[in-house]
Length: 131
Image (cartoon, rainbow, N blue to C red; front, side):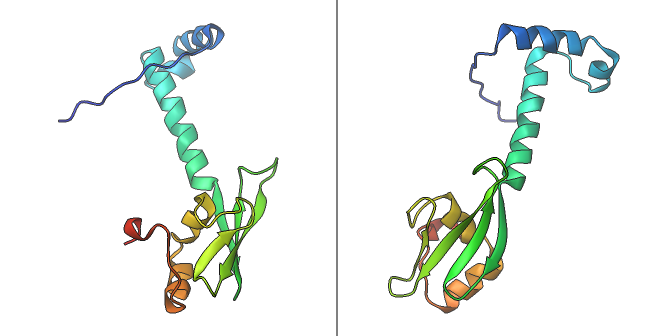
């Protein structure tokens, strides 16, 4: 078994006090968490899963663009447009003003979009990561 490596992080004292109080409640005990480290680890994992799962959503694809909802932009999320530059065979993100950003990367993770782009001989800046 490979041992997990750890790194330290600073947590506000007021949060540590609240965590300790919560661990001593019936609800805290029901969660099966025995100490502050387990509590923080569990909370961070849960938030990461939520954020990673819901950050992007493919909205639609047109001949000249792909539209993606990014829930981290603004208060309620915003639509990002990846323009398909036919002459250069690349996608260009209007929000990041880049051909290599998280939005373009997400576009290249969408199976249906990738099929269309490959038929049109578009090139991914993430080719080595796409299977």
